[in-house]
Image (cartoon, rainbow, N blue to C red; front, side, top):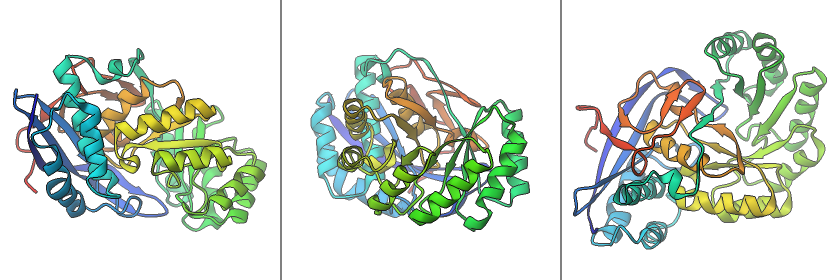
Length: 364
């Protein structure tokens, strides 16, 4: 099964409401779609969002990396040599994790389709359903309380609350969300690197003193400040999740070996796809470090790949795969079914992706 072509396109999907964090505001998902095509007619689908504020990847950068560097290394290769193809993707150029992730995901999809087996079963998984949280964007406390009530009305029992814009307001924001959501809803908070280490400990301690019952805090300090991350981990009663500090298996190992965080967030766009995500999960199993599986603001193709991974690894205990439910529509045919908090993996071959609705896949 030889790879004959790597094709690029893009999709645009509006969000239900604007997505706001300490780093950015987004109104629609604008993703680059990759098709890896084999000589037997099978097509593997992948996808990547431009998330310059986090990964450094823009749309043009993703397209250029795939078209000029990755695709030439794949065309003519045997797609059934998944390990060799994946290594070619990772070795094509440095950084550019989102571009690598899109192609890596497509290779897994193509390989699974060639075998007639779902990817999660290829990985030894037997779970069919997982439960995701939903993100509450950072806004004024009153608006965040309204969003929390709406999320609970829709059936969500875990909220991931964005904080960090005007840190003096963060405890008030969380108090409003907790009051609106009620005592039984789990609250996770994500500061997106917005705090300094001592400031983070002070804010977290204040939140706990208010009885907010936080499940975890995600990336409270700057990504490169592992010493500061470890300081927060040591001095806060709230478990710390490393996100932007972990872009690669090596990063994950460093965090685990130095105990810089209590948990690690695996995101396909940061680490370069399923192949490296599996390596991080394997390291986590060795060190006994639980993982969250997260996503950027992505449409269903790439989030669907993360669902397959979540269904195959028990070390992944927390799910933050709400990208598709934040979108106002779904142009992707096939794949996992996102029914609010309940996500059901597809039993279709590969990742179960059949294509894009007619007229929705645009040229790049």
